[in-house]
Image (cartoon, rainbow, N blue to C red; front, side):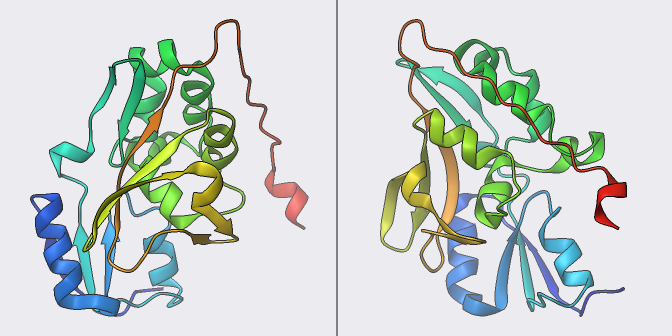
Length: 194
């Protein structure tokens, strides 16, 4: 199917994206990788009049360790997370998980922020972020806030994001000495969905 017509806006900064969200309100959706939003638009399950592309905002794409905390920008792709030496050294289970998401195309384009905002109960990140005691950082009209992963995911496809808030990143503290984690994915082959 072809999605309904929409206006495309490319934000060059988080502040510009916030301004566009304020301007267009409920008629706007954020776009980064698009692997959740675009299929919903094609099925006409979601028909925003305005798409705000945040995929090229540099400040959302960083991955770094600072003062013992891993910082991952919301725009970091699954492939970038899987390949990052900082993620592999600080939270190897997250790197392993990111490397198992979807196929190569999904990993190269899909973002951690998009996955978290979509809050699909079958997504890979929520369980891992819960065990890593992660926080999701957001910015909105009322400023910034940090939401514990356990509080962020509220229900199926429902998060703690408030109106016009944008996920800016994820913070993961150092794991306790001697701790470890592993993520095992239950495969869902197409033949199981008969």
